[in-house]
Image (cartoon, rainbow, N blue to C red; front, side, top):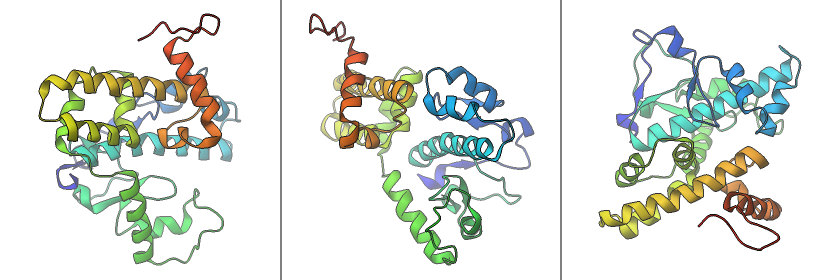
Length: 257
């Protein structure tokens, strides 16, 4: 619900809040983002890669910006879909705007005012070389809107209500951050939404998906189910399923139901 999403107010938002970043791994708001990434260095190959680069190097700064945008994008997508929470902007505007006035860049995933996006896109460092640098404002907004709708399909308020009933931990954060899992949640809700006795069942199924995706993110650097279902990742997904289920190769059994 774009109209319900709150936007950071430059007049009353503390500088400490403005400078914080949502971690794309744990979903928590961080003040010292680079330092925080060190806690994930041993479990996430992409984090280890960026932290291994020389400090203040262009490649390191570019990759850190990409990871910052990734976490903020995940948070913003959840806020825009649920209408709950505040948007994390790339740059806070002096004038107050509503959530519908903003849109994510289709290249770097940072959130900009719709009216300003075309200026940013002209010099976006994440834009592919082959992309046309002379695309006009309307074309840019059209491309961004298509990208936004593909990534943030409408999830009903009933689904978000069910999700808020889940234990608030790393698994539920993972569930809320993945579009494919949200679509599965919507499917469950369409089938069982009128029966509260089924909510525990829905929670259990979603948490199973969340555990698997969390394993894929931590051990295999696959961050979405959309990526996981690609044929090239079949063997990786099988390995992750075995690992998350506690599969015993010798006895051909699992220790988790």
